[in-house]
Amino acid sequence: MSEAVLKSIIARIEPLNGEAVEDAHQRLNSLTKPPGSLGRLEEIASQIAGITGEVSADLSKRAVVVMAGDHGVCEEGVSAFPAEVTPQMVLNFLAGGAAVNVLARGAGADVYCVDIGVNADLDDERLIQRKVRRGTANMTRESAMTREEAIAAIVAGADIVKELAGQGYRMFATGEMGIGNTTASAALCTVLAGISVEDAVGLGTGINEERRQHKIGVVQRAIARNEPNRLDPIDTLSKVGGLEIAGLVGVILGAAAERCPVVVDGFISSAAALVAAALSPQSSAYMLGSHLSHEQGHRKLLEVIGLSPVIHLDMRLGEGTGAVLCFPIIDAALRIMREMATFESAGVSRG
Image (cartoon, rainbow, N blue to C red; front, side, top):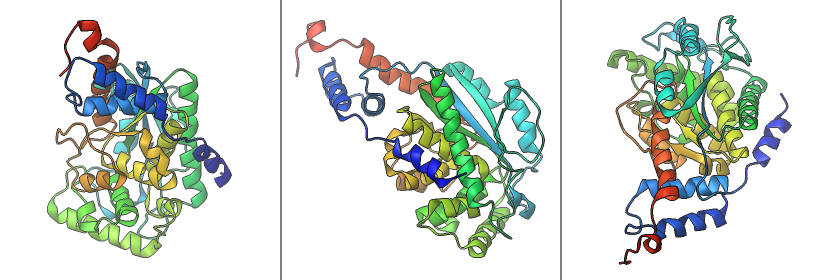
């Protein structure tokens, strides 16, 4: 896949609509409340206005894009679960039985699962097939994938968003499935965000402290073996990243190119957001940080990107669960814009 295609996607990402942001501020300040008293709800409403160009956008058609891929680094014993769980969970997503499916139904969102790099042959008409390769290589021995494969996965993610936007979807959430992906995410954080390996590596699927120390060593070996260029996010992604992470980079860039808000889930999704922001600093304005993961490196990662989590529930599941839980909060911000009375309409005196 040519880098020119990726550059064309990035070139479509424009600054937020400043006029719409100002109109949103004026609307919020005219409502029957002290200025700024609704805190983050007001910030969200203004950001959505800038993204969409509408003071009160209709974002009722929304999608969670769950990227699935396997990781060769699982050979190093970094996870509490075997790699076979990835394809098994994909089938669970398609059957509607995973946590993200349950939460998405409650939030009025549709879940789309994408095989971007599962190390298995999955034949199901409900699955979006975009397999770049059957899982990444073991990054402690060689690059996780080639540069061309990383770009192909990014472009695939952006193309899916473009297709869904063409069907009327106006808000997206990032989700992922891939045993071993916290290891790849920690490596990306270490290289691109300058977070120490000790701070970036957490307990993942529930390993103990002894296994965490082993995982730290695995990440250190992978970085030493591949020598990723921190000034080149695609080089870093290809050497120590993951296919589903690359796919989510494309989802984020694609949403920004379509002027759609994208709600970023937890640690793995935020690693993808880190790469997206490195490729297109302007894309971060289209991101909403959903929650603060229990994964220990997530707080520092969000700070580097410039995202502030809306909720904190000690979650560490991934799949898009935290992002979906933010949809009702975003809806609340937009309802305030549409339905709340102004001082003038309600006959209330201003302070």
